[in-house]
Amino acid sequence: MVVPVLRLLFNVPPALAAGNALLFVFANTLAASITFWRDRAIDVRRAVTIAAAAIPTSILGAHVVALFTPRGFDLLYGAFLVALATLVLLRRNVKSEPRTVPPRRRLFLEIVVGIAVGFVSSLFGVGGGIVIVPILLVYFGLPAHTVAATSAFIVMLSSPVGIVAHGVLHHLDPYIAPPLLVGGLIGGSLGARWARGLSTRALSVGFAVLLLLAALALILKRGG
Image (cartoon, rainbow, N blue to C red; front, side, top):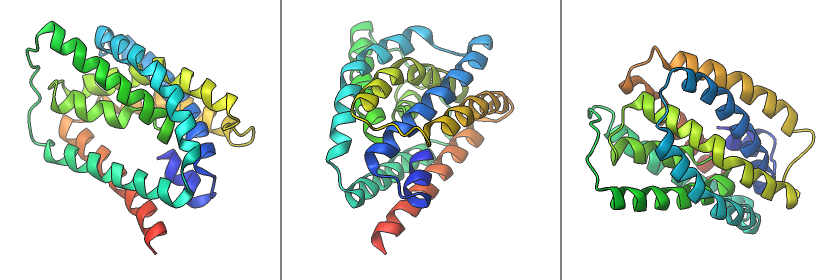
């Protein structure tokens, strides 16, 4: 949600929006991961594998975002959010059941997910959570609370590399970054606590609605 706010309300260039939003995401997921760790809700092995695979492409994404025009970035980002929200809504009433996946295939899929997460996180400044969540929900069949905890932990581990890459490319703003950092720390802690009392369906619908609202705002701005 940070990227649409920076783009729509403050007209921050795409590269700066992605870089500063990724810093917010790191702070947010750091605070959330502390709470989730205490609850023992994180699938640590899966998270470490995916995060490790995300490192190389997170550097690539920071370079690619600088090539986009503002219009192209907003439209692509909006379309991406719509696709993910649709996927989550279609799965909202489906009970998640863990799948038995052969070890080699599971490792291959986790590496592929990590590669995608690293690129998307630096490209869009989203930390990759919007990629991880649907995949863990839909393919691996994990419960929503485990997905939320594991996704936050993956992003916390993988996003620092992307942040450094954005910093080297001068995509961090000294006026935008500090308030986002503070807000991320506070919001991450509160969100992780409130998630305990929400059902899987409520989490899925809430996530999808936020994605659709952000996408609609971006697409209408560029289509108008």
